[in-house]
Length: 310
Ligand code: ATP
Image (cartoon, rainbow, N blue to C red; front, side):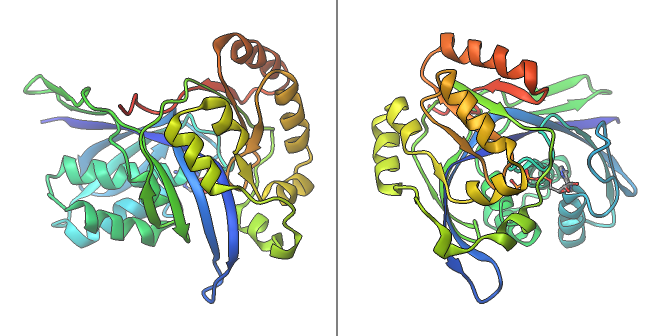
């Protein structure tokens, strides 16, 4: 039998990101709203004797430093009976962008192997494993991604095309303490990543809390989110890491300004950057901005929220 499982791994954007302080364990205390978007890696997993990870991208490792490999190792070691897995990552999410590309691959591998080998691991246990891999992985485990299981010999193709859901959460702590927000669909999100990768560790390393000028107003953001006012939602997007990342990658500020000139109500950096997103309230401005930005930046994407979510 030649069984293959395909699972989508959606990227996230940080609609708000605030740093509340430094913890004793060296991590920062975060308060951030994360939202899954329809920019996805596709992870293909087949049963195998050994564990291997390959991809179509020269930008990510194919050894044990790949987060997908680490996720697979943890789940196979804890729940397997000596089996491995052959994993292929179709990389579409820009690497080192602040879009959680590695974390979402890891979360998808945890879910995918659990289904492929029918381990029946409860969600809580998967969540515990996910927190060992990285701060963004517990959020990436939320939602209900598209999964296709193809059993070639039997000719069965099972697709969970129903009920595909993205997630939006307030994340606190290192990012692992999650509170879900109601599903809201943002139809026009423009993402632009300059040709530069930022290290999350380097950005947080340079962050100084007393240099924050403006912090996100989480209360106002959540109110706008609940009443589903896209202009207000966009207005309250804010990221305190922007000024640090912009020193390392000045194009962040240029992209923000350009996107706002092109009609984004507000353009904000995601995570530790350097990807910048703008939320638009209609197709005309969004499509025009996409065309203009794409001329200067190859990694420009016009996407929406992941899944309808309603
Ligand atoms: P975050 O938003 O969670 O901080 P990021 O989007 O800034 O993440 P990633 O794309 O996850 O950054 O990549 C960060 C580093 O992780 C890169 O140096 C990359 O080589 C490494 N990495 C390991 N595994 C993966 C993977 N499966 N996909 C992408 N990057 C990976």
